[in-house]
Image (cartoon, rainbow, N blue to C red):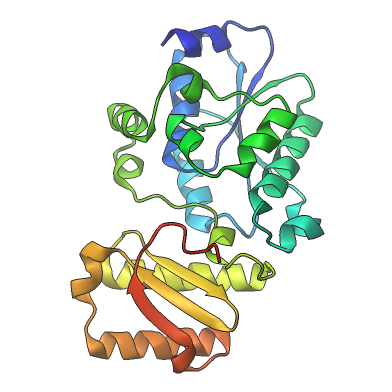
Length: 260
């Protein structure tokens, strides 16, 4: 725990960028519980069309229970053409806008994220943006990976988050090169909520681009989908997106399928 104590001993305010996922939420709650100085820590959450609404609402509840003041900000990535073009480095522009907004609001603070050791083995343009803004990652410094963080989350009473499937931002569902729009993200969120309500929570994805929708369901849930449900699902999704049922395909979840 010495890494986290060292950050709390710094004279500057600590600002944690909290997405609502297990990593950043576990970090900010851990620091909140370790801190002995009032107003030392600021929880900052970006509310944009790319963030699932349930993430924001769940985080509000967690912050309230922790006695923390959650600051909601609105970065400007949806006014940034480089982000909306959805190139392979989309995450760089997303995080650049996020950290720029945080720095504008807290110019002298130390900015922290919940990035962990496992992120170093993946393609993460957002880490480059973090480096540009001198953002720090305590879990990486402490050598924590996703498994350790899930254990920590369970110990701190975040059992629902600890067992929840990974859920990156909604923009990750749009095929690379397909322009991002808030209207499409709203539809993606509706479809994924529809899947979770029908067959239970899991790694479900609604991917969109090139005039088609690819629905992916958690492999352990596929046996819950019969032909009748599949036909109804394809019809409902095609109506929502203004496509035909032939433009909708259904398969098993595969990580990274948003890149083409």
